Image 1 (cartoon, rainbow, N blue to C red):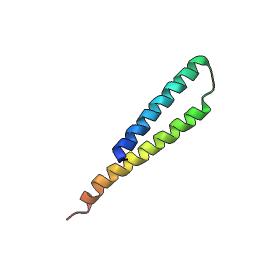
Image 2: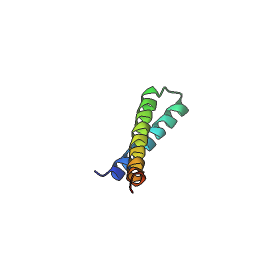
Image 3: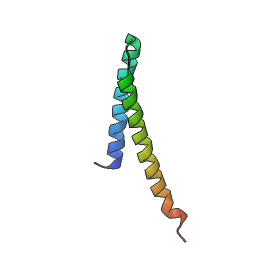
Image 4: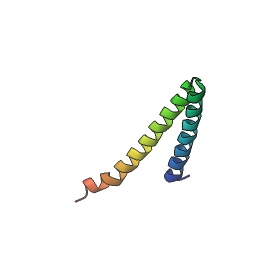
Length: 64
């Protein structure tokens, strides 16, 4: 699985978790587990995006 595909999968999972959280809020239920999962997926996504961005620009900074 490529990094782009993995990021798309994470995005889809975040959207699904958001829908679950919204439904639980409407019903007045607790959503601690979903909030934790959402936070972890966002961290993964940011880490992968930042790493990708850094790897694209890093070689150009030190080329002479």
